[in-house]
Length: 277
View 1 (cartoon, rainbow, N blue to C red):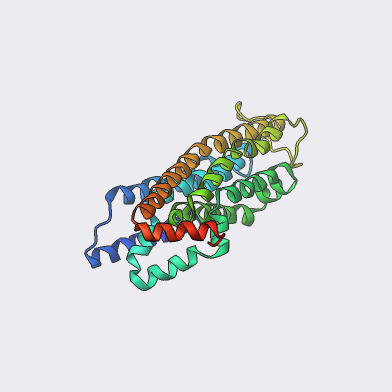
View 2 (cartoon, rainbow, N blue to C red; view 1 turned 90 degrees about the vertical axis):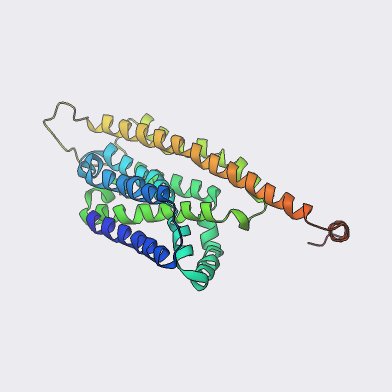
């Protein structure tokens, strides 16, 4: 399944590059490298490496895999600007349709950093329930997570990068300030896993003769340590992105005011005093 996802995702990006070439438009090589080496490379590393191999047997491998798939892999894929490539390769009609989709309420909701924080925290809280073992111990469900989780991450990451110009600087300022709450909310599931001395997911004991194999409780504590660390580290670039969006939007609004004539500015001021939008 992982190989299929890699082939399809790589082919779709390559199709976009081919369309750009046919149009005679240039596409920065750094974005292509970021997509294939960073995005596809990280996905292959997670799914085909140690974490994907031992996700069924080790709880910390499973939770770390999910955390990387929802946080790191989508961020590295987004660094390749796949949405921007799609818009430029689709022509005027396709670009207009994509822009309309980005304005859908549900897309804007997922692209809101505050919603993303609560959503991811809710996903991580599932690790504290027996359903965590259901996901880990059911083969088809574990395989499906390798597709569904990074897609959910992309749905949250791509709109955040694409909707800068659709929101006011006031909204972005509030979003930026509330994003600091992530530092607390994202840590809660990891802290609870780390401090809990009972096996939360009621998973059966999986024995292994390797000397490094952890006990079930130590496995759970490692799980909490890793998702806590990953969630906190990934908050830093999110805050940077929000800060950049805030600065760009503030600069754009300042230019809009500077371009107004004296009469237009006076009319806008009077409308504001009358309580009109």
